[in-house]
Length: 197
Length: 289
Image (cartoon, rainbow over all chains, first blue to last red; front, side):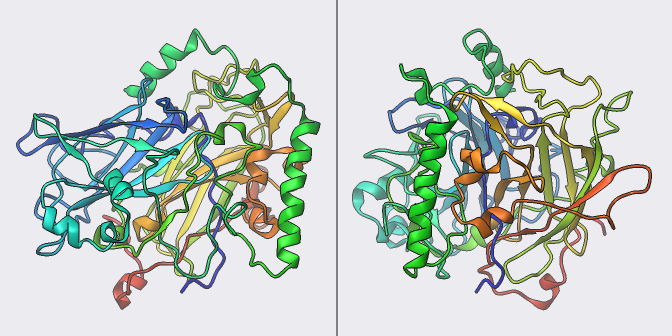
C-alpha cells in the first residue's frame, strides 16, 4: 500500500524525438538473428487516423520465460537480450520491434509482452499487454483476459504473420479501443474521473 | 532512424511550431486564451465542488481533458481496466553505467562552447510510494533552450537555436535514489493549442521504477511561473496539491557559488506491488560491481 502521494505524469509532448530514441532502440535482437521475430503495428486515434507521434516501450521475458535483469539496453552489444526496447512510430503511425517470442513465465501461463504507450496529446502513459495468439488454453485461463468481454479481449492478442512475426495495432479511442490497464488498486481514483464518477 | 524520416516528411506541411494537426483551432473560429481559461476554470470549479462533497483528491492528470485539444481523439473513452500486475510487470528493465556515461548529466558541456542562459542544477531523489529510494535506475530529461526553442526539427518557433545546447541528458540514480543534472533554465515557448498559447518553462523527465508499472514520463516546472493558470497541460492535473508536485523548489543549499542556481525536485513513483526482499530494499546499484 502506497504511503506517499505519487508525482503526476504529463504528456510526452511533440519533441521527444531528439531525446528518447537511441541507436537500435527497437532491436532487442539484431534483425535476422536466429529466433528473432518482428513485432509491428499501427497506432490509431479515435477517428481511425494513424498518429505519427507516438512512442512505445516493450518489456518482456526471454523465449524461455525468464525475466532478464541485464544492463545494456541503451548501448546494445548485439548479443545481450535485455528484454526492453523503445520504438517510435514513423510518419504512417507504424512501429516495429525486433524481438523474440516471449516464453510463459510459469508452466501453462499465457505469454505476453508488457507495453507502455506515450504520445503527444496523451496526458499520461498507458499500460497494456500484447499476448501471443497460439496457446488458446492458456489464453482462456489468463486472469486478465478471462476478466474481459470477448470483443475487448481480442484487442490484446496479436496476429501471427506468415513470416513468423506478430502484428498488433493500438487504438487509443473508439469502439475497438485497446484495453489499457490500471495497476493501482490501492484506492486511488480512476484517471478519467470527470465523466465516470 | 524513424523520427528523422518523420521530421523530414512533416517539415514541408507543418511550418508552425508544435504541430497540432488535429487541433480545433484549425476550424473556422479562432479560440483565444479567454475561451480556454473559461473551460479550464469550469473543470476546476466542478472538481472543487466534488472535493467539497467528499470526493477524494485526484493524483494524476485527466486523460480526458478537452482544453488540451490534441487529447480529444487520443484519450481512451473506456475506464482503464483494473489488473493485478503479473510476472514481468513486477520487474523493471535494468540500466547501469554501461548504458549511461557520467558526463551525460551535464547538458552544458556537450559542445565546444558554453550555452547561453542561466546555468542551473536540478537535483533530487527518485522514491517509490513507500519512500524507498529507487537506486540504479535510468532518468532521462529533455528541454528547450534558454530562448524557448527545442532543437527538434518540428519546432519552428522563431527563437534562436543555441549551437552549444542540445537539451538532452541522462543519468543513473545513486544508491539513495539521487539524481543531479547541470543544465540551462529553459524558456517558455508558444504553441498552437489556441491563439497566444504559451507553455510554462519546463523540463521533460522520464523515470523507471523497480517495477514496470511505475514507469513515468512527466514535466518539471519552476516555482512562481505566471503561465501556470493558463496552461492546459499543467491544468490537466485538476488537483492543486498534485500539480504542486511537479514544481521544483529553489534550494540555496544546492546552489553552487559563482556557478549555478539550484532547484530541488523529488519524484515519487506509484506504490510497488511486489513483495520485497531485504536485499532488494537496499537497492541495486546497476552494473557497478
